[in-house]
Image (cartoon, rainbow, N blue to C red; front, side, top):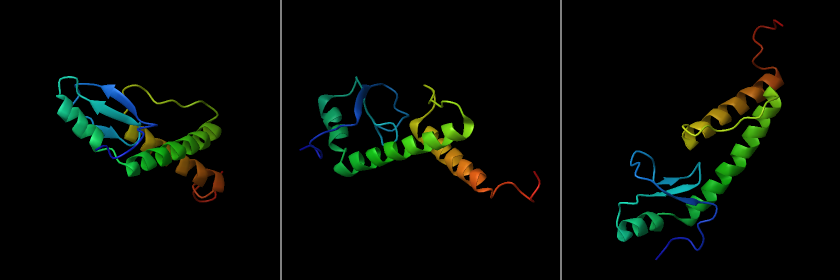
Length: 114
């Protein structure tokens, strides 16, 4: 039996790339290998839980917030590149948002020099 009644907002992607996580909680992707058996596909799908869906939604909400903070601070639109892993992009935006906030608070202006 599947652990969820809906996989939304996950997307299913067919890929033979075995180096990536099968369930991506940052990018919202469930990866199925096209060469795998139906039983293996079901195994991957059965691994998705309601907690995974909750975590993904929270990660998406936070990423949107981080993106707004960074874009407002830099005055440019920021988008994830195709070769960037979802978690790497999330962590980068998280750090940039934290630094932007610290900069806005004046806590990184070191030594009072302007």
